[in-house]
Length: 411
Image 1 (cartoon, rainbow, N blue to C red):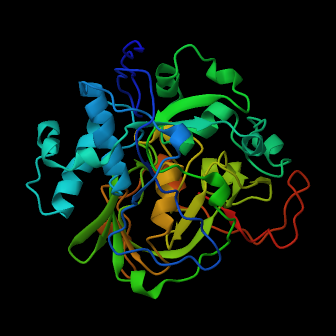
Image 2: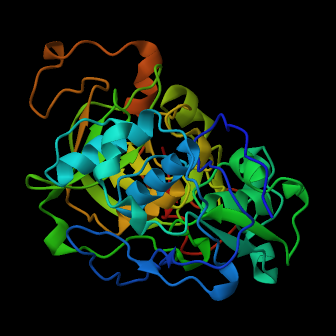
């Protein structure tokens, strides 16, 4: 029985064409490792393996392979190798080609970043391209109402996914609209336990495996690694000496509030951080006593990761809008999709160097201010906010959790 060809999806996740009704085939990648109090160091060149897919989840290979399906396969391949193409959508556009070029560089191949040159890669290792996911009763624990106003968010105990659709989309690095195309005839806004969806065969991001840790332990062998952020390319590269280990698409601040150029250090890394929403900081760069502490969760403004730098108010973090990476702006920070952010957390450590190119020029210690072009008033906001933690107790509008007041991320 044949399924109709899918329509083109104008977003950034996996899109392709089924040539036949899905039936048993082969493997699904392993899950992202849980972060615990003592995370095990990852390999210097991390690359998830592919595990066996349960019989009931296998999806047959579609023949012949269409152009969109080929792109999906390439995106999954790059994603598995830690060269993030952004959301998987079967469109070999900006971030897919940038990821391809970086993968080529890391593996000593001619760097062309051209789609036709991807045919030389072992893409057949991605088999099948699609698998299935069945909504479980426990998935309902990850979903709930998420109010828009920070004062209302501060009254919550957690910041869950706003819908099962967003939960599944982030789990499989996919845009909701792409999943809708992939699952024609199903109302994805009304999912219930027992519903089965077609999803890309990518390593799933498991929010339930992420633990709330105020400060990850130092991994000494990672200290000589470095992060390079190219704000024009909108890419984050992780290197070890001359070796490129991983690369992910980012949102590097905004035109009004770009990330600060310079060489920085990682002060600390937290998973499932809280967020201190202070209008004084966001609008004027001035810390005030009128703030709201937003609890942890995938819908937290800084997502599932806060990696604070020794530049007040600036950090590398996740996001509650992973499908807008590369398009939406931030207050001078570096945003990644949550699935990329949590993988990055397993490969970095406190004390590492972070180089930001193309942002606001910032004077180095001991350097006279006049040597650096003056920062426009509208841009000063990202230079002044306080660092990643708040010594203040929660306000009456925020949850009163003893011992938690010093673990709020701020950007």
